[in-house]
Image 1 (cartoon, rainbow, N blue to C red):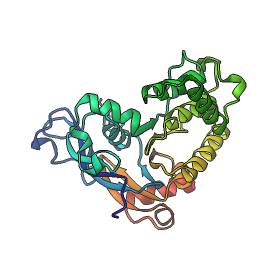
Image 2 (image 1 turned 90 degrees about the vertical axis):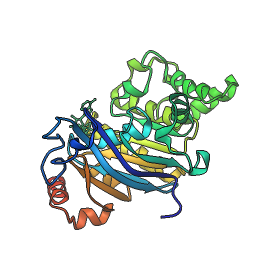
Image 3 (image 1 turned 30 degrees about the vertical axis):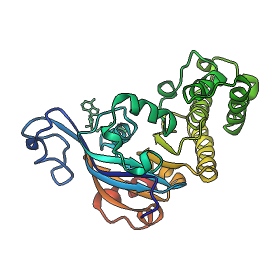
Length: 279
Ligand SMILES: Nc1ncnc2c1ncn2[C@@H]1O[C@H](COP(=O)(O)OP(=O)(O)OP(=O)(O)O)[C@@H](O)[C@H]1O
């Protein structure tokens, strides 16, 4: 694919000793991500993909398969052990994000890569109001005009279906579903080119989760944002993404179109995930 917005090349993250002794004996073939020689956890290894503008890529796998670590390394929450990542909108796609100093990474997190976490408390300041949280992101991105910040915040909260009468209420008083909507509004506030979603509906009741998924699907279709959606839930991946990577014990075991993977999974682990999703 030549029209990429985000490109990740052979990304790896090892927790513990990172020397070459830590890789042998890990991965799907061995049924573990833990190195028998060093005890290191090879949380993800050799992961490559591209995301085009306006495209959503899914990453699916059971708990511990390395999905969140992959996302955290791209976002800059964790430091990758190896590999590279590029954004077309940063240094014309020529600078490895993973090698940038912390100050640049912090700026990228505001201007270029937004994350929606499973737990709204990770992405929000619960002591601030809904409007205050969105304003916070806009201010960090350099917005200065109070009136414009306020009107952008109302526009976003309206789009994410947070009642405007509650715009000035402290987010800690909101339900989980509503907090998640505010987190989404905040993540999109300054129109970042890339959105990273880590189990965005996992903590919510089924009916609330369905509403948030609907909202996300609409937003991903409407905005030209490139997205990576991490989930253990095939329903979420099916609803939001066109292509998908399947991860097991830190490695990608299958990659393809989401529909096709759901219809005709090739790898035994993907077959297991699909069977579980079909109930
Ligand atoms: N800070 C850490 N120190 C040591 N090991 C870690 C750390 N963070 C994650 N791991 C390990 O890395 C592996 C991958 O974890 P990760 O959270 O990325 O998986 P996941 O697929 O996102 O699962 P979940 O959905 O439960 O978060 C696991 O074995 C986990 O125990």
